[in-house]
Length: 349
Image 1 (cartoon, rainbow, N blue to C red):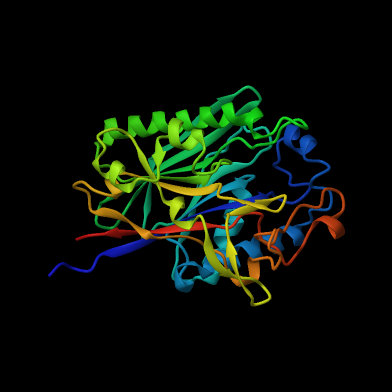
Image 2: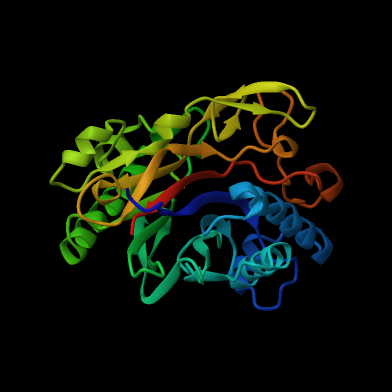
């Protein structure tokens, strides 16, 4: 009889503009100038409330034990990320959360990708922490890569992504910026190949993020090599990903008023759901000689009632930013404009 495996909860969440308060003294001058209007009225009290709201949801994951590894995006800096980790440690005293962060100085709006990890469960190998540029005409975004090691010595290589947005001049539509996301997909695909060359074809590789495209878009299916066919990836000898988000294209939920509803996205725009928040797993997490396996049926949207809007054309309840008018633009009972997503990883003895 086989021993029961140990399992790890891995999650990702776009934190929706987790900026340090207005007047934060260590903010780069160029960024302070760029964000002057958005952050007017972003007081320390609002910042702390935002952190508390985010932490309350993260702490509910994993049946109230929190995730072992959380990838995030839209966090301004180490100060903001550390505040979130400290709040989580206060809520979950059995945890020892620490942050994994590389300042993406080239990002035009000062929003980074990063990780929060419980080092007792998944210890970061900081010498294998990398920030990969995604070059595009209007600037760059970074993909943060780090190797995490279990107590048994098994490696999980994670890449946190936040691909270029769909914003475009009026009438242009998402195709205007599609090439930027294709470049991001090629960047992810390139580093997937390089990791396999160094770590071997059975390396446990997981890419997660806000891809700003749906799982059927070319940036993912063609450029990043992410497919809905699990068997094709398990048998593949090349660098391909199985896209777990196909398993939660729709998901039952309960809204904040206690009524059942179906979700058809991880975020909503103009009344329509999009599945931009995705988790991709490589062959090594599906087959091969390694000890780590993705429990693919566990992939889900982490949508708790208090964060689900009752309106069908809306998804998560946003917190927002003041943009000069906190009374109008901030909902202190909100969270983020994205739902988190998660999957469990099993480890065999």
